[in-house]
Length: 108
Length: 113
Image (cartoon, rainbow over the protein chains, first blue to last red):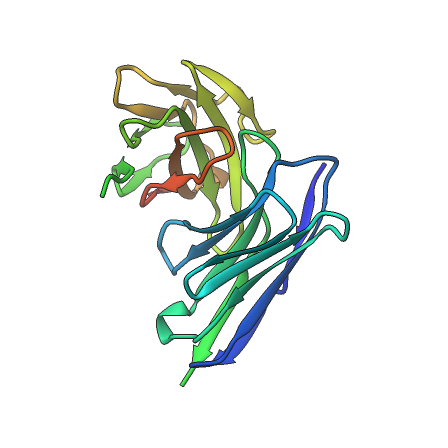
């Protein structure tokens, strides 16, 4: 089976940088994705790492280390609208296997 | 910008009744998915559909569930005899490729009484 671990809650100040970590256990996968979900909303895609290293998309970056079974999402220049839940998800094939999510609260 | 749509946005049903949740995926996408999210919990995979057949399903997707692509645009999830524990938000998603970004619809909130 697969399992993912991420912190349940993170709080950060507007304008700051925050890192959300994700550790996983799996026998194989294509890549690690990150999704954002606002309350009552649909998950929306943020970033995907198929290979080790850093992927940068605007204010968001994601990192993967297959040897360490570890990834993270880095959010820079935090804005109030970034308050949401963030899920890492393993892509073992067809399905996405989501972690339990990290609730990010951005404060003024 | 193309988007996945789902209807209805909210469905209330009595335990034991059948429900059909409908989705219109993005038109040039080939892979279709159903997920569910019980309130306050993580998003859980139910089933994936490719080339007019189920490609993968989870343990949640038992004999009470079925999926269909009745025409070139719609993708449906049927629950034959709903249980209280089926109450959840059901998300449809579609993707161009197997490992590509999945685009999620706004969800259908199913409430079983």
